[in-house]
Length: 109
Image (cartoon, rainbow, N blue to C red; front, side):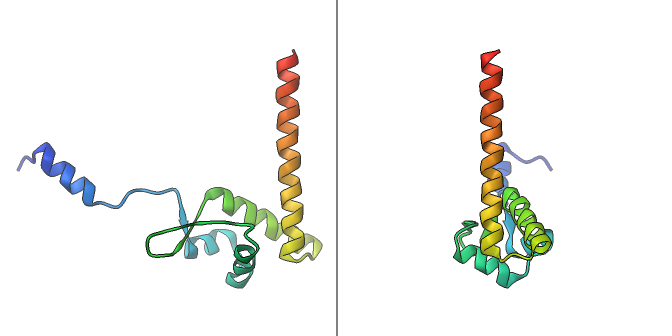
């Protein structure tokens, strides 16, 4: 049975929109972080996830990368989440400055 374009559009409007965001449970699985530790990071506003209509947190892939880095640094150096977050922030700043220096050097050539 052939469907009309209008029928197909109506069906597609009912389907959920694909998202690159990551739900709470999947985020915990991908990062290996303990929920209470993640709660600390949220309280510090080190990670600021989006919220879905149902008030659930939605994280990004960048959040996964940052939290994995944080866990590794905290575990390796026996740091608190606060101390580890400062180091991750500084490392990100250094990376950003290195990119800017590289751009300036490329522009000067």
